[in-house]
Length: 128
Image 1 (cartoon, rainbow, N blue to C red):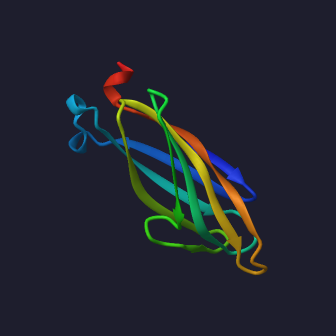
Image 2: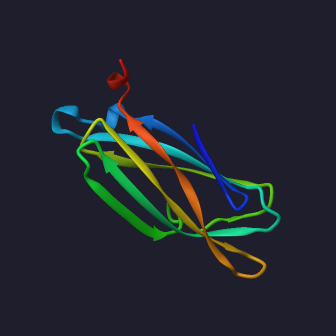
Image 3: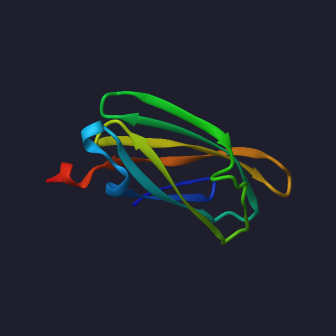
């Protein structure tokens, strides 16, 4: 698990290879990831936007931006967590992702970026 804390917001990532949704002969490799966002600050925050950088083993770089996560813009109270699962398809057996969430403090509407730690996506058979 990869973890990073920015301004009291802890982001943890777990990655899972999805063999049932991958087709290695067609260079299609599917990975799921579980993100846990824990608010260790003293104020409620709202997740407004996400920005991902996705890089495969061939050096192909993609950027994904949008509102919220999986159709939600959760408000996370102090001491609470929000968790979701999403996925990414790669053309190679190995890749990595990292990015930022744009958050907003609820009491004064100040916006700030929270860093998502870089994590690797590796088909398990590549580790042997």
